[in-house]
Length: 190
Image (cartoon, rainbow, N blue to C red; front, side, top):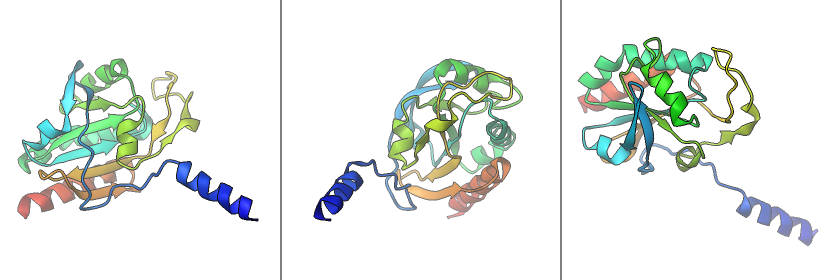
Protein backbone atom coordinates (compact mmCIF):
# COMPACT_ATOMS: atom_id res chain seq x y z
CA UNK A 1 0.00 0.00 0.00
CA UNK A 2 2.85 2.39 0.81
CA UNK A 3 4.31 1.70 -2.63
CA UNK A 4 0.99 2.74 -4.26
CA UNK A 5 0.89 6.04 -2.38
CA UNK A 6 4.54 6.71 -3.18
CA UNK A 7 3.93 6.10 -6.91
CA UNK A 8 0.78 8.25 -6.78
CA UNK A 9 2.68 11.12 -5.12
CA UNK A 10 5.48 10.89 -7.69
CA UNK A 11 2.94 10.95 -10.54
CA UNK A 12 1.28 14.06 -9.10
CA UNK A 13 4.57 15.88 -8.63
CA UNK A 14 5.85 14.88 -12.09
CA UNK A 15 2.74 15.99 -13.96
CA UNK A 16 2.70 19.56 -15.22
CA UNK A 17 0.63 22.04 -13.24
CA UNK A 18 -2.13 23.69 -15.21
CA UNK A 19 -3.45 26.22 -12.75
CA UNK A 20 -5.04 28.93 -14.88
CA UNK A 21 -3.85 32.41 -13.98
CA UNK A 22 -6.25 34.30 -11.77
CA UNK A 23 -6.97 37.96 -11.15
CA UNK A 24 -3.92 39.54 -9.51
CA UNK A 25 -1.42 36.99 -10.84
CA UNK A 26 1.56 38.18 -12.86
CA UNK A 27 1.03 37.47 -16.55
CA UNK A 28 3.79 35.65 -18.44
CA UNK A 29 5.65 38.33 -20.41
CA UNK A 30 6.03 36.48 -23.68
CA UNK A 31 7.77 37.39 -26.90
CA UNK A 32 7.06 35.45 -30.09
CA UNK A 33 6.45 35.72 -33.80
CA UNK A 34 3.12 37.27 -34.67
CA UNK A 35 1.35 38.47 -37.77
CA UNK A 36 -0.53 41.67 -38.53
CA UNK A 37 -2.02 42.30 -41.95
CA UNK A 38 -0.25 39.25 -43.38
CA UNK A 39 3.21 40.35 -42.28
CA UNK A 40 5.16 38.62 -39.53
CA UNK A 41 7.02 40.52 -36.82
CA UNK A 42 8.43 40.00 -33.33
CA UNK A 43 5.67 40.60 -30.77
CA UNK A 44 6.39 41.44 -27.12
CA UNK A 45 3.72 41.60 -24.43
CA UNK A 46 5.99 43.91 -22.42
CA UNK A 47 6.13 46.40 -25.32
CA UNK A 48 2.34 46.30 -25.73
CA UNK A 49 1.79 46.88 -22.01
CA UNK A 50 3.68 50.18 -22.30
CA UNK A 51 0.71 51.42 -24.38
CA UNK A 52 -1.97 50.21 -21.93
CA UNK A 53 -3.87 47.05 -21.00
CA UNK A 54 -3.73 44.08 -23.35
CA UNK A 55 -6.44 41.59 -24.24
CA UNK A 56 -4.59 38.28 -24.62
CA UNK A 57 -7.01 35.81 -26.11
CA UNK A 58 -6.23 32.15 -26.68
CA UNK A 59 -8.17 30.28 -29.37
CA UNK A 60 -8.03 26.76 -30.85
CA UNK A 61 -6.95 27.50 -34.45
CA UNK A 62 -6.99 30.07 -37.23
CA UNK A 63 -9.89 29.47 -39.61
CA UNK A 64 -11.71 27.37 -37.02
CA UNK A 65 -15.50 27.82 -36.90
CA UNK A 66 -15.77 29.61 -33.56
CA UNK A 67 -12.30 31.11 -33.86
CA UNK A 68 -13.30 32.88 -37.06
CA UNK A 69 -16.42 34.28 -35.36
CA UNK A 70 -14.33 35.49 -32.44
CA UNK A 71 -11.64 37.08 -34.62
CA UNK A 72 -14.34 38.88 -36.63
CA UNK A 73 -15.97 40.16 -33.42
CA UNK A 74 -12.62 41.50 -32.17
CA UNK A 75 -12.03 43.20 -35.55
CA UNK A 76 -15.51 44.76 -35.61
CA UNK A 77 -15.07 46.05 -32.04
CA UNK A 78 -11.42 47.02 -32.44
CA UNK A 79 -12.11 50.77 -32.27
CA UNK A 80 -13.99 50.38 -28.99
CA UNK A 81 -11.06 48.48 -27.46
CA UNK A 82 -8.67 51.16 -28.74
CA UNK A 83 -10.85 53.97 -27.37
CA UNK A 84 -10.60 52.29 -23.95
CA UNK A 85 -6.79 52.29 -24.32
CA UNK A 86 -6.37 48.56 -24.93
CA UNK A 87 -4.58 46.50 -27.53
CA UNK A 88 -5.48 42.95 -28.56
CA UNK A 89 -3.39 39.90 -29.37
CA UNK A 90 -4.70 36.46 -30.29
CA UNK A 91 -2.59 33.41 -29.44
CA UNK A 92 -2.86 29.92 -30.97
CA UNK A 93 -0.67 26.93 -31.80
CA UNK A 94 -0.74 27.90 -35.49
CA UNK A 95 2.50 28.45 -37.38
CA UNK A 96 3.28 31.91 -38.71
CA UNK A 97 2.37 31.05 -42.32
CA UNK A 98 -1.19 30.15 -41.32
CA UNK A 99 -1.40 33.26 -39.14
CA UNK A 100 -0.22 35.49 -41.99
CA UNK A 101 -3.27 34.36 -43.99
CA UNK A 102 -5.67 34.67 -41.04
CA UNK A 103 -4.46 38.09 -39.90
CA UNK A 104 -4.93 39.64 -43.34
CA UNK A 105 -8.27 38.01 -44.18
CA UNK A 106 -10.91 40.78 -44.32
CA UNK A 107 -13.58 38.36 -43.04
CA UNK A 108 -11.69 37.59 -39.83
CA UNK A 109 -8.83 39.61 -38.26
CA UNK A 110 -9.06 42.16 -41.08
CA UNK A 111 -5.53 43.48 -40.35
CA UNK A 112 -6.83 45.11 -37.14
CA UNK A 113 -4.80 43.25 -34.47
CA UNK A 114 -1.93 40.76 -34.33
CA UNK A 115 -2.22 37.02 -33.89
CA UNK A 116 0.74 35.29 -32.23
CA UNK A 117 2.27 31.87 -32.81
CA UNK A 118 2.73 29.49 -29.87
CA UNK A 119 3.62 26.31 -31.79
CA UNK A 120 5.09 24.54 -28.76
CA UNK A 121 2.35 25.60 -26.30
CA UNK A 122 4.84 27.33 -23.99
CA UNK A 123 2.83 30.55 -23.77
CA UNK A 124 -0.46 28.71 -23.20
CA UNK A 125 1.13 26.58 -20.48
CA UNK A 126 2.58 29.69 -18.78
CA UNK A 127 -0.96 31.09 -18.61
CA UNK A 128 -2.08 27.79 -17.07
CA UNK A 129 -3.83 26.48 -20.17
CA UNK A 130 -3.50 22.90 -21.37
CA UNK A 131 -2.83 21.89 -24.97
CA UNK A 132 -5.33 19.32 -26.27
CA UNK A 133 -3.49 17.07 -28.74
CA UNK A 134 -6.60 15.01 -29.52
CA UNK A 135 -7.75 17.71 -31.98
CA UNK A 136 -4.81 17.19 -34.39
CA UNK A 137 -6.10 16.29 -37.86
CA UNK A 138 -9.40 18.16 -37.72
CA UNK A 139 -10.44 20.30 -40.70
CA UNK A 140 -10.82 24.07 -40.60
CA UNK A 141 -13.70 25.94 -42.27
CA UNK A 142 -11.78 25.88 -45.56
CA UNK A 143 -11.40 22.10 -45.43
CA UNK A 144 -7.66 22.33 -44.66
CA UNK A 145 -6.29 19.79 -42.16
CA UNK A 146 -5.03 21.36 -38.93
CA UNK A 147 -1.75 19.75 -37.91
CA UNK A 148 -1.62 20.90 -34.29
CA UNK A 149 -3.55 20.55 -31.06
CA UNK A 150 -5.73 23.25 -29.60
CA UNK A 151 -6.12 25.51 -26.58
CA UNK A 152 -9.46 26.20 -24.94
CA UNK A 153 -10.93 29.60 -25.75
CA UNK A 154 -9.78 31.76 -22.83
CA UNK A 155 -9.18 35.49 -22.63
CA UNK A 156 -6.96 37.29 -20.13
CA UNK A 157 -7.14 41.02 -19.59
CA UNK A 158 -3.63 42.06 -18.58
CA UNK A 159 -3.40 45.44 -16.88
CA UNK A 160 -0.67 47.90 -17.65
CA UNK A 161 1.04 46.71 -14.45
CA UNK A 162 1.46 43.23 -15.97
CA UNK A 163 -1.08 41.61 -13.68
CA UNK A 164 -4.17 39.71 -14.75
CA UNK A 165 -7.17 42.03 -14.31
CA UNK A 166 -9.78 39.53 -15.57
CA UNK A 167 -10.06 36.00 -16.92
CA UNK A 168 -12.83 35.11 -19.35
CA UNK A 169 -13.71 31.55 -20.30
CA UNK A 170 -16.72 29.34 -20.87
CA UNK A 171 -18.42 31.73 -23.30
CA UNK A 172 -19.35 31.34 -26.94
CA UNK A 173 -16.90 33.14 -29.28
CA UNK A 174 -18.80 36.43 -29.76
CA UNK A 175 -19.85 36.49 -26.08
CA UNK A 176 -16.18 36.10 -25.12
CA UNK A 177 -15.42 39.30 -27.04
CA UNK A 178 -18.40 41.11 -25.42
CA UNK A 179 -17.14 40.12 -21.96
CA UNK A 180 -13.60 41.24 -22.80
CA UNK A 181 -14.93 44.61 -23.95
CA UNK A 182 -16.95 45.02 -20.74
CA UNK A 183 -13.86 44.27 -18.66
CA UNK A 184 -11.67 46.67 -20.66
CA UNK A 185 -14.24 49.45 -20.42
CA UNK A 186 -14.50 48.88 -16.64
CA UNK A 187 -10.72 49.07 -16.40
CA UNK A 188 -10.69 52.32 -18.41
CA UNK A 189 -13.18 53.92 -15.99
CA UNK A 190 -11.16 53.01 -12.88
